[in-house]
Length: 207
Image (tube, rainbow, N blue to C red):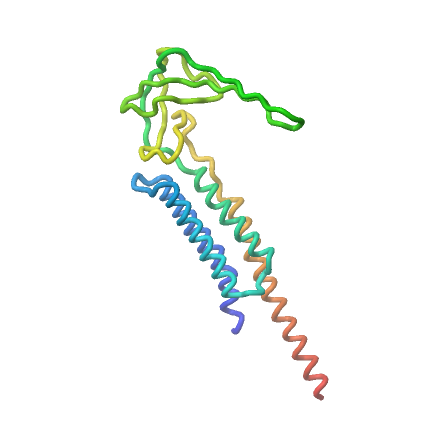
């Protein structure tokens, strides 16, 4: 019974923290009334700090450094995947104005990524935004029509409407948080076994 609180904490801290952080990131990035990016990040960091403090307060030895590292990595992955799952909430019709400007971005050194070519399109969009869109392909020539998805609060970069879909997945953050909980549970169980063996040895010596 004495171990009930640490066991519950080992399971609930990662689960509750991960769920709250996902919902916070999702609301901050997708809601039309979401917070500015800086405030959203500050809130996410605050939730992460509370989770780490709760982990330390409930079981200081539970899982050790490895569990804390996995908890931190899992919560970081939660934020990244929630961000990548965000779908931009508005779509506008645009026309490419003038010639498409092309810039080349070479890379140097062994193992460097391939050189990148960017195509910069000046746009005339309904509502006036965005005024320019850059991509690694020519999306249309002068006078061509394109559809752009964008965030009305401009917290995220515009994308082509055809690419406006969710790419985030909860698999990686969930796996990291489950591993963190498993390490904590295992450490708590071993701590109990160690105390039991120590008490048995003391009884044997006294008899």
